[in-house]
Picture 1 (cartoon, one colour):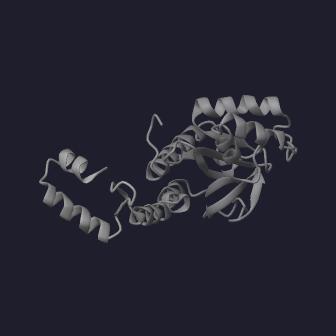
Picture 2 (tube, one colour):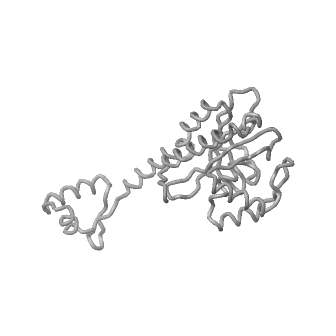
Picture 3 (tube, rainbow, N blue to C red):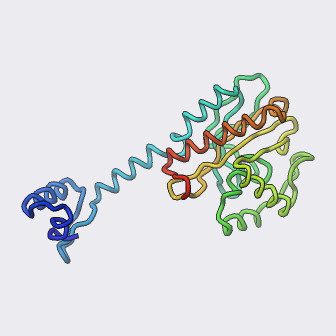
Length: 231
């Protein structure tokens, strides 16, 4: 905008507006075009935005909710993202129980068998989902693992309807996991948060409560990343 346009918009004297603009320009918050003399945002805004994004990355945004779930249930809490067609674990809080899951930060797991993988896949744009499924080998890790495309698509529909994903001994016999997707400020799925443990702690009388808390945490993390309902 030009000085005249800004003066009219702010309803301020031209001299006052100019002094403000000059100060902001000297500090890098705005810049003046040499071609038409109009003002626009300066490089300092990019620096501020970068710092804001760094403070609000997925791991930082998820940590408090992960701790909350860990204290609430005592089971392993995981944070995962999609990387090269697999689930990549980027943060884990281990269970305080003797019997617990053994994944580590930096390890990978198959999308089609994990709750985190299902939660992420269920909210991918159609093109990205098709590409993901085209490269999926549907390895049978246990007798309960989904082994083909159509049943997996049916599972993803259930995930979208329920708001969470469930792994019922599909990766490891005797182990269950509940996950919910996390979204960024643009409404794109950024990853998923999950709670996992032995199957006896995920019986029908307990699983709904765990799922509700995981979904609530995922929503809280999404809000920290700038996501707003209805995006």
